[in-house]
Image 1 (cartoon, helix red, strand yellow):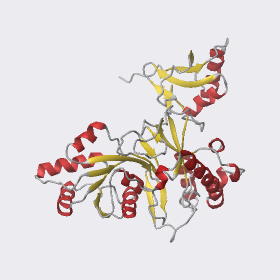
Image 2 (tube, helix red, strand yellow):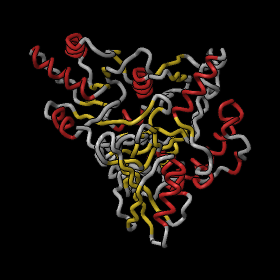
Image 3 (spheres, one colour):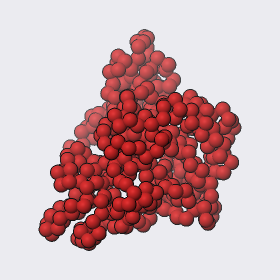
Image 4 (cartoon, helix red, strand yellow):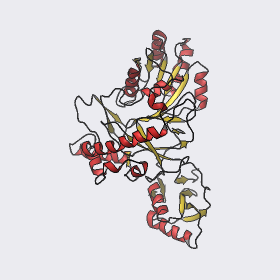
Length: 417
């Protein structure tokens, strides 16, 4: 498995960055012209000037909650079902439309491998001429189509197994002898356990592309012990593929078709390399242009390059959720509010709000990293915290690099017993 899907995977980082930044300026202009939502969000932005990561970082972040609200508002008014984010309406340019919980509706375009998942399948060992057993859902959500179109782009045949009906899944595998499985890792485990219970051997099944849930090493090893080597991919219904695992099993390699930033939760500010933050993604496809779309997921850049020879940046994988909104004394406190307090004090390097105490007796402590311990700083921070959150809190000033690198802006340390 030392081959590559295409030459993009081994180009130099400088070459990749130059190509991405040139495409970025075009994508911003395209979004402004063909997406009414981004015409508003990016109003006044000179697309020609957005040719660097620094310029990109000055653009507003769009969160899933905003996408949902714009879609809901537009539909209530009898307007565009996509809230102005899609570049096309119904018809030949949009063969399918899907729904995610919310509901949020996502269009599928006509491009070959529209969701860009073929790269991940190739890295997992799938090859032309093989049969693939696809156990992602084929209704409402796009997961089944995301993987099927990718398999077709590789030249594979697909059995649309979908979800459930475990005995029938085993029977189909025994009859058709697929080379690989696509779906959640937990369902693959269920299928293999059912096959053992039925006394059915599945020797043809040697590889798997899994996604949509955690894939711990224990489960990976359990599958490998039964002859199935599983690799994971990370993507969303809005963005398609974001990153994928390789045979090196050292983090996830970023897809070639997206620009990824990692920002401090509650802000759009990029964090230093290696620090945990929220993944923010810009897509480069024309049908559903998303500029600085926040995934709500935490991760961090993994230093160095993939041992397989792929040169794209790697991330550590999914490390939790960035939305840490917490209710304190009956009021919601948001990561954005913590960031707002920290930004008012240039000497603050990093801030973390810890909520402790027993239920009904909440204690808020704002922990801040700073190189300066000017007199009165703690009192000023406490006053600002109260102004922003409308809640009293204590302040603890700590040395630089004292706070955990886990992406948490708000830590709920209360006892719920």
